[in-house]
Image (cartoon, rainbow, N blue to C red):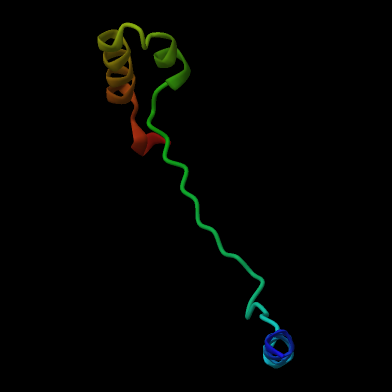
Length: 69
């Protein structure tokens, strides 16, 4: 008897539950391209010497004139 009531309860819950549907399928994404003004690839090769890599990046960023771009 208990099995029957459990099965019936489950069936009633399954029948009475509405299907979930998404309200809107569109996804909006914003990305920003932030260019440092330095050749990061060269700096990555210099990483074992972190001080030289940091100085290389700083020199290139300092030399970049963002207003002329």
